[in-house]
Amino acid sequence: MDLRIRQELTRLAETSAPASVMVVCADGNGLTDEIRARLPQTPLTRLPTDTLVDHMPELTRHELVLVLDALGRLSREDATHLIASLRDLYSESLYVLLPRDEAGDWTEQDLVALGLERVRSYAGPAGASHLFRFNMKDYKKTPDWLNPRHWANPEMWDKARW
Image 1 (cartoon, rainbow, N blue to C red):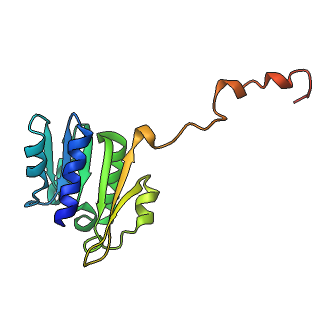
Image 2: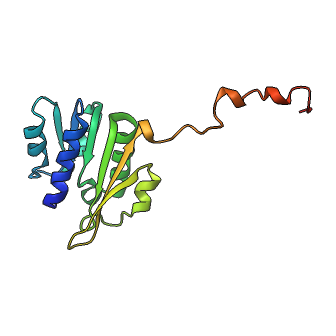
Image 3: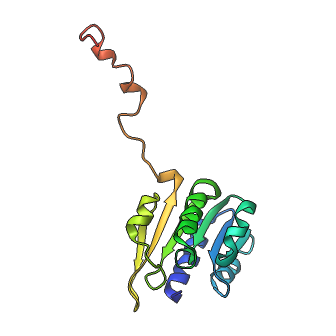
């Protein structure tokens, strides 16, 4: 992973000040050490991508989850299951990195279909990498029409027959 991306993800973890962090990455990735150095009091869980499927039943909910290389290392079915599970059950805020050099046949539309939105792009020698986010708090804005003011239509009483 590019040093610039690692620094930005570390800064993201530091500025969001989460109660707990989970990082899904391969062995030898320095991101977990950098986050642990910047947030020594925050509980940090690192899940190795290669054995992730075995650890899925033991997962607990975390405020911030970073998925770095699962799209390139897991099968498409396992990666889709992982992202959907993390999104729905195990995270408050989920960030998934789509690296151009390791992503396989994943496209931006695949991640948008899972409910994630692209928040950042990083240009590199192997192509652009993209960072996607899912946060339940701002996933869907409440539309204006969905409020008690419009439910009963009192202005139409005795004017029209339904």
